[in-house]
Length: 153
Image (cartoon, rainbow, N blue to C red):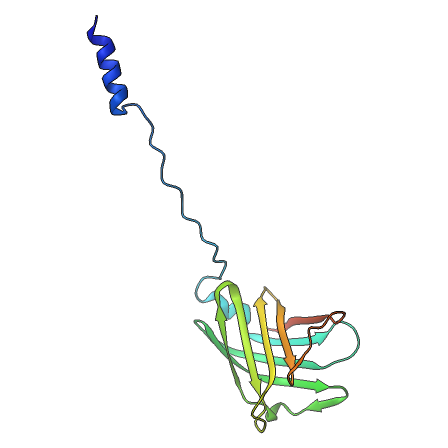
């Protein structure tokens, strides 16, 4: 009878019957779309317009997306009541970083400084603007709201 307590104690000391916890699952905070899906999110024609009256107005076409880069062109621009010829702007290249953050810098063919600087988070059919500069002037000022949305795919 003395053997039974020793066997139970020996099994407890060895950890028999103890359930092992699996290691915690790795979680990722990266919400970037899978490869190839970024082109679906970005290609098409986009317009940036003020929510209230006024301007300026800008429309761009994103023609191609490959990995973390994209390219496109200005299709329409208007400051005040003056329409800008889209041919005066260079084609642009942009890049996409983690969490669908994208940046674009658009240059005038004549001027050396950037005409437009835009950074945004890509949503389904909208951009959440983080930076929007027109000719060096910050357009994202208090009391001024902008809408950036897809017009065509």
